Image (cartoon, rainbow, N blue to C red; front, side, top):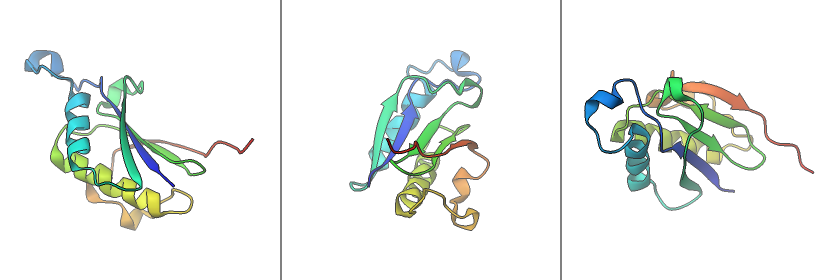
Length: 122
């Protein structure tokens, strides 16, 4: 089953307007994740606005029939990308999507915003 990392490509962290950056912070994070993502059961996609503007850079980690997590407040860099990918791999391996805290990569701790139950089967 595929676990999806959905990255908000329109996220702008505090101070972005004054940074002179050509790309949004979310687009920069998406580029890092896409560049480092292995082929396999974890896939990456972009979406414009996950409505978590107060915690930009936002990502959602989700798979059919599993718990979905929204995380935010990341730096748009390779360290954040590696932590997101490592957590998504653990999510993919989990039957329910829940990953025990002791297994969380350090780089995702403190970044969880919401957890959503899986959608019911029709």
